[in-house]
Amino acid sequence: MFPSTPDPIAVIGAGPAGLMAAQAAAQAGVPVRVFDAMPSAGRKFLLAGRGGLNLTHSESEPRFLARFGGREAVLTPLLKDFGAGEVRAWADGLGAQTFVGSSGRVFPKSMKAAPLLRAWLRQLHGLGVQWRMRWRWLGWDEGGALRFATPEGEQQVAARAVVLALGGASWPRLGSDGGWASLLAGQGVEVAPLKSANCGFDVRRPDGAIGWSPYFIEHFAGQPFKTVALRFADFERRGEFVVTETGIEGSLIYAASAPLRDAISAQGSAAMHVDLLPDHTSEQVRAAVLRPRGARSLASHLKGQLGLHGIKMALLHECLGRDGVHDVELLARTIKAVPIVLAAPRPVEEAISTAGGVAFEALDEHLMLRALPGVFCAGEMLDWEAPTGGYLLTASLATGLAAGRGAGRWLRSAAG
Image (cartoon, rainbow, N blue to C red; front, top):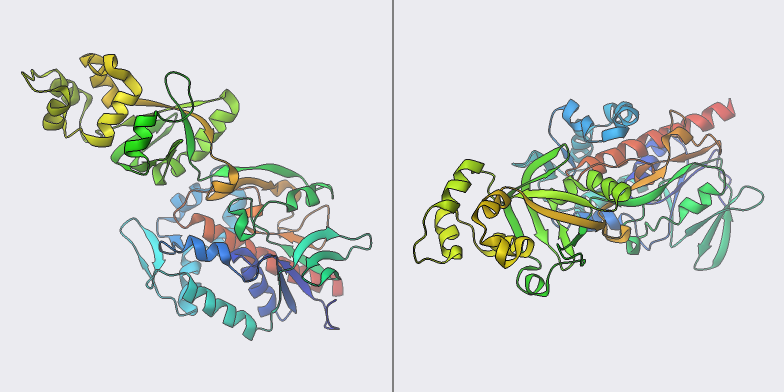
């Protein structure tokens, strides 16, 4: 149980949203204790920063807010309180000076997550935040106390306010396994099913089989498609993506993952198109393909005329087959629009993030659950999604701040 200190707040989940909620409450002078199932805090935060910690994005506020799609309206007030500028100021305050990369993404100059996390945890310790690690939340007992599985057996904790920041269901080995969804649904909370976001996909070959051909896997799995454009419905963007053994993944695919996933859910598959030569017009490609090649092979001709070779040429063979590749009119059209049929998103535990979660309609403006007064939710467990690029972390911090402040406000109003 908590010691006899007034108005304690229990924060369950020691990721960015939970830590920011703890910071907000502690800075308001409220005793806080953080609980987490893992041995240490911020494990997913650390893993996400291994390739360079992308804190936020420097683009204009309207473009930034638009990245949140259907949840832009509900997240806008929170992101106006704690948006990209505030994230940079927060990091600077912890000694992690930031810079803007060529893509507009914002990183700490060290590019590492660990120094920032260590400084943040020192700050929280200085604010008096207490910790219980390896405590897995099990829900509530009949008296309303929080139940935890701990190394010493089940424990109950009484708290006057609770912030749940339990993450989605991606990367479950780091603690966010989505197990909270059934606990909240059992309490009458509206929870949308958790789905993969920023994820890869399995492909369906023209013959109906799932995955690439054995030849394509053997020679090209793990290799990138560079300088291509992806088109699907209203989505069109240039970038890169990578071939996997079963399909595709990578930054360009992640950017389109929400509409692709939703189309598969509605229709059973999604047919996207890849422009292998976005710097060439269709007329230029057609003219080059139809130009006489003499004794040269088709592969040599396309390499010399258009720079098509390697994985791009292999994809044309994969999609068109031997006969189709030698149909010059079909080949010219396909170079500018290679059809790739996606059969399914990769499982949620492989995804970078998740969609679905606690519906915003189940929350008040301070992120308190209407069905459970005094219980607040923050971070990826809420029903929103965003592409990679710093948007996920920024919104997790913003919702954590709002929930922590909301919990402090709830305690003050209850005391009054």
